[in-house]
Length: 180
Image (cartoon, rainbow, N blue to C red; front, side, top):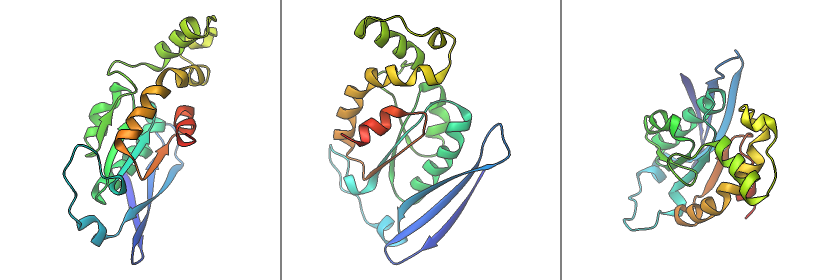
């Protein structure tokens, strides 16, 4: 499923996760910084707010080609001692939880990219969505959907307080969120 190659130094472990894209034979590379073995063994504090130094937020879509490499990364981060909060549609919840990461929704458990895009276009922007949104073409839905989920995600990131975020290129909401 994936290979985990690690290069250690006294304080950090740089891991390269190699995942196989679902439709193509070329590998996808994701690099993440993980704590060294010593840092991973430190006890975590109990409380209502997540310890910022040990949490990471991953944001993705449901597409297998987008999800598979990041699932490998989630698993490697969990093994490295991180608390991983993986935001994605409910259709991939089982796969995410299978890595040991916590599945998180984008505002509601039944959130759907295309429904969110239609709702924003029609109700908030008073515009007719592009026909491609109705036929399920992702590039036409991601920008209006960003307006739908951003208020919720800002609040969730304030709760999680991740040390860093990793997101797929098909998730412009995550890039905007990283700038806030």
